[in-house]
Image (cartoon, each protein chain N blue to C red):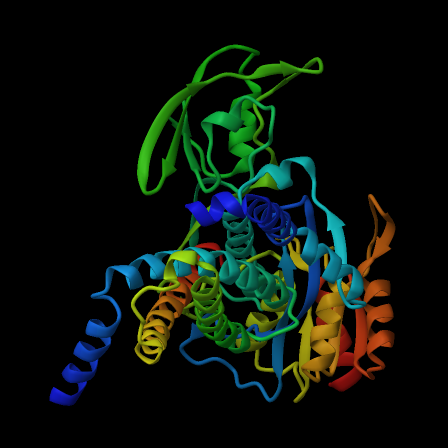
Length: 349
Length: 121
């Protein structure tokens, strides 16, 4: 203790320097850094009894995202030509990382379920499932449901009336007036919970805070009754961006024509029940990863859209990234699942 | 087995048994904590930003803990006044003791790292 007393100035200086350094290394800022990723096989999450053989492979590309970066990570990202720094939304930056990961995992589950339905449908096969409520993927701040609902809740009943999909939920909710209480029954952590809730007025509109884009239908599949039967073996992972390539992969396993033609194929983009490919973030970093993994063909969504930083297009971004890598990988613009299937059949069939 | 017991006994009698060593050790641990947390925080940022691999990061966690213990003890041993004109501590055994403690701590840190990783990723 005497030593500290005699050296208190040095001790205070070191403590201040330590605090500054730790803030520099650990303070979470509202930025996220997109770093080059790689590719994963898109064929391993589902198995079939007798899948049609494939000479090539379908791969989903991923990107490494560092959310809530520290000032030091932000600085490293600035120096990295292959990294992209983005400002997080106000709500996102206040959401705990654990919840952000849960949201991202729910997007992945939704993409897997949608892929199965679309691929079976496109291949003319029969998949059996029931719709049992809607899953909350994200909560909207400053809406009546924000405090009551949790990410991952499955809404199964409204005032004791069973609901199966978003359309039913929306129809029932439209009957309620502002501040008219009703009961919502949800499954949370495998337990059924019922609570009362009411719509509230926000900017002259009567809202609850449950929107289609932030929910998905809770499908309960019947793999044994489907034709062919399937087995979901891996539903881990994050994000919806593998949806499109997963669909292609399942489609290829269900149909006799091998559309890989011995090629290593990768791609990115969400998929919806209509078979449309949706835009996705971090395409450049995915292309960097795909080039490194010696991918032959990369499918990228071809839609113009606006961001805070200006207009973007996934396909054009992918072309720029390929040029940086000086790779001869073929980049193909797609808007629908059929675009990709037709491209492969026309060019390699 | 007898040999190992003898070595452990020797290290204990020449280190932890002494009250003075325990006092020095506590100060060493305190300083080590500051140094090691800074080094690990620095390399965690480098690792997350993909400049080093996970294996390198694990290696860094072990070496930084060992180095932090060594630097901290060297500094404390030189600086702390009540060490002077006191009984002589056996440095050889002290460094053996510190090395073992550093390895154990680094393994705990690695375990904590994997636990945190399993929660968030």
